[in-house]
Length: 428
Image (cartoon, rainbow, N blue to C red):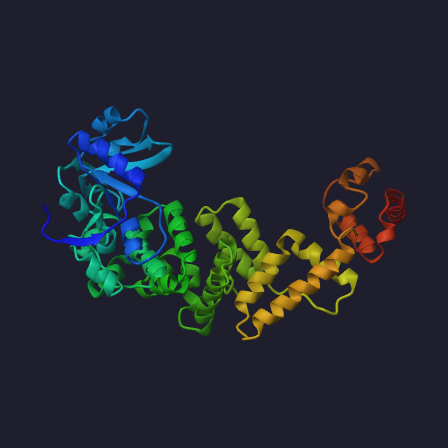
């Protein structure tokens, strides 16, 4: 059937073989395609299977008791089989991409080769016969895996023009696999990088998350810079493109990956070198996070780290100073701040130092954890002040700050009677 069959064999799971038997009994073919095959050949764990089939969606609906029409207008359904969910797409071709992303015309076809030819990169166009396990390589994907190359299928100009998100996917796969783009693929990515502006903020954000979470995020970010994608998406970073600051960005992100820190830390490492000071940096970062539609949770965490990046824990602090540090940063953010400072400290002893900092803070916190360190710990609140004739507004916060400053130094003062007496005396 295929001119370039390989005798490399994929270990098809038993349940997928049973699924295949149902397709075979209806004279239809089904193949595992894409990432699971690629990662198996690279010895990377991946149990996320994608399937393509000769069967049209309407026929699949008739073959199984439980089918969810997840993307039926694009030929995709989800089959529930033996308590597992399998996303299966009919062989198809795509034409007339209207918005640098979505095809206007989808046509079902009868053979695997036409379906694979529409995909993005050769290493993602590997397929596996679910009956025999034979891996099918029609576009020299094996060769590109061997040489660690990401290569577009066919004309890279056409592939990137059809779907501009493929520009970022190229960077992601290079990051994930520690590969580099093939020369023509890289050339056209540079030529067409400005097309990324046609992609929605949500999809860009999603791809950037995936790049930052790879094992080599610095490769993806550097490739984004090389192609022009980085400054099309984050023009605020342009000022650091030819300075040591850009090298610091890459080093910080590499550290975040090396120590398996969270996405919060990785995004902060990417953006922390903006601006001349933490306040200016926070202003610019806030604009970026809004533009890329970050959740309020992520936005609050990243901005907190940006604003408190210079709050460095000191072993010699008094208990009061430790409590003010907690009040400033928030106890829920202290470990994140330590992780960030670990990433941006390029001294070879940084890991030893952060270990000592964590241990010291943990011991100090055990001593003071039941003492007041923030507004919610105060024995009085804004309602108490209003009930006693103080007008709502900035004055409330100022008074509470004064009271908190008192009880941080003298925890025994944190009673409602003492604090209200002090407030009323001050305001007479």
